[in-house]
Length: 428
Ligand code: LLP
Image (cartoon, rainbow, N blue to C red):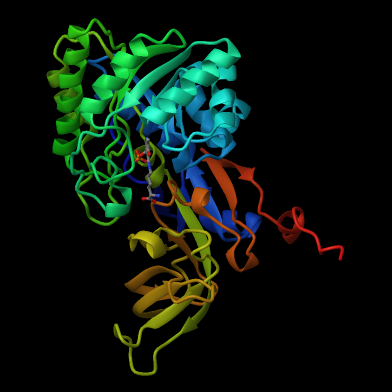
């Protein structure tokens, strides 16, 4: 199998647009819109590419479940040999339901509750990524109570600027994540004396959508200083977890070159014995998925479109389906799917039906659009469906996994019955 980076998810041929060998028009007719569509081949290629990039150092991939937690996607990652990075008991349950191995699960996150810690200890996860002194204490006391030894790694905050959007930057000392190196050393010394804890590794995750290698390498260098300090204190670290964060191209960014990253990491590691761990989410799934949506109405500006008076294409996907544009002002490419319709050329804001001006998918795009036309909202495989809500009582989209010329519905479209199931009219 090729280990090149996967490139194009969508292909244009025979007058249509395709994901693998599934025609998007036919798919939309069969399942409706809005619909998330993911490609099995793309994800498989992304995992092969990453494995190959890190082939010279023993490396485990722990897919970050938060990026896309559909059971079939998790099952695919398990089949591809990946472990998982989780941040909640809910994500742990998903991994188990998908057939994932608890012994390959890392548990990150600053707010693990007692119930979540117990769940993870009982199923036998591989390691807790501990984010504070108080959490270490809680894990130790729960392990003692359950008569178990809890595997731990300290998440170090290396105070490195990942040069990404401030909401998704996590490795600066003003961020809530991890502990500073000096405190980490103290926590390791404490854990080494604690019979309910077993020290496994060291961890960091400095942010997401990082397209420069330097901050990631700087973080690794900081971790290695600590690893050496620990060695000097007779504390052996089995694994070094570099977190996720590898960036992708949404618009025209030059994405992080995974092979270059792998080579640079191998060089810095030299002949150290530790296994590397990576927690990638976005880089494996974002460009493996689209959100398929249909234009409901075109609302053209009487003044001729401009930033002050835009043309609006009102589509059936909204901020409740894909919140990234509203939340981070994120760019997602818009690709018209049925190119045969005679449309109206212009500069369009692509907006949803939700009653907020923040409900936009894209702004100021030069496109030719027609009512009823299908569009593909690109790079939607990560942090799309997982962030969807029922705002405006909209049913959440369905999800499709394409495998060559066939597709499966991996999550059916929600119905209003699903939405009302947990509520009732007050008895009084
Ligand atoms: N490990 C930890 C501890 C994390 O917090 C994250 C992401 C990852 C791994 C995976 O990072 P990735 O490889 O996907 O960059 N909703 C935002 C992204 C939030 C990322 C949060 N943490 C977005 O839509 O851009």
